[in-house]
Image 1 (tube, one colour):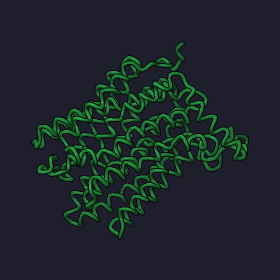
Image 2 (cartoon, one colour):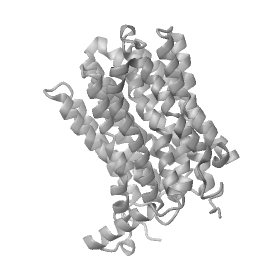
Image 3 (tube, helix red, strand yellow):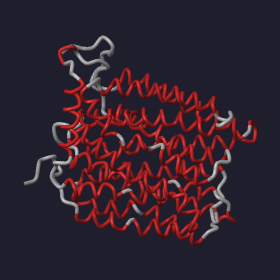
Image 4 (spheres, helix red, strand yellow):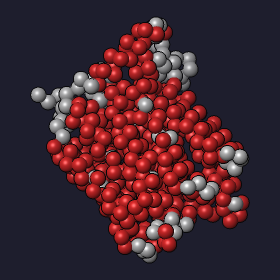
Length: 434
């Protein structure tokens, strides 16, 4: 076997050593764009409606994966895409640090974050492709909890430690400089991840010459269309698409408003948390419970099989929205009750979160173009999160937090029903069912 001169030799290592860091590197850009930017813009005086609309729109590249993934299968290697996109994220975060506070900083920051979103979506395709190519069906089930755990470990760093640090630094250097420091730290972390994956991630940075074949634009487009259309010829695909869109629809509606609700003053119907409290309760304790739930869920699914537990996962996944509904109805609450509720809802969120990702890997993606087909399914899932997120700020402003979270709970019901009746194409061992 020929080894690219650009890729260092490495021995076979435990999948955890790269599964953990690849999915952490997926999670950090996404949480910075979808969550941390929300808090930063809130502190810097941007309105809730603008924040929810534009930060939701920023995740659009994750819904455009079907346009990227077939081309990626034709050109380049998974390892190269992971390495380069992590470098891009590091550079963009450094530019965001420099751009905060200048004239029109909101527009400039949105443009920079849009670049990172595009890079991050490409990184996700390559990372998922590596996961599916390097691990068999049983290993995918075993490591799915760790995958989800480290993806969301980024939340502990960002929503926990970094937001807490903003609160601590603000009194000394001001809110603006505190947020600048946070984005700079995140950029350094992404740079370290790129260097680490250069040496550790399985695969090559460059395809061997014997595997490279020049294609005309017409051939590339024909292959692109063939791969894309073959996705919609899969068994049960219509039911699968409905299920994918509904499973996380309520999350999309509530996930943008929840942090704003926790930080809004009691007079405005919120919980009135400070940055330090938010970082500790939601970002640290809550995310630690999310990770615990994700890891336990992976072993739970591996033991019983996804088919037997999917309905239970969907029920548990929607616990967070009930908790926020109770917060809104019973508030204001003591800080201890808020911390306890967040810990409970984040554990349920994490336990149920991995169900849909594994469903897409094991029921939708299998076949000759699994990386591209998983990317298509994943993009549709993100679309189901993005669209309600764009509307969420306007709805909460119009009806108030109490009614908003009631709506979120009710909208979860169709997705739960789908989880009960959705058909399976493959069994627990990856064998096709007749």
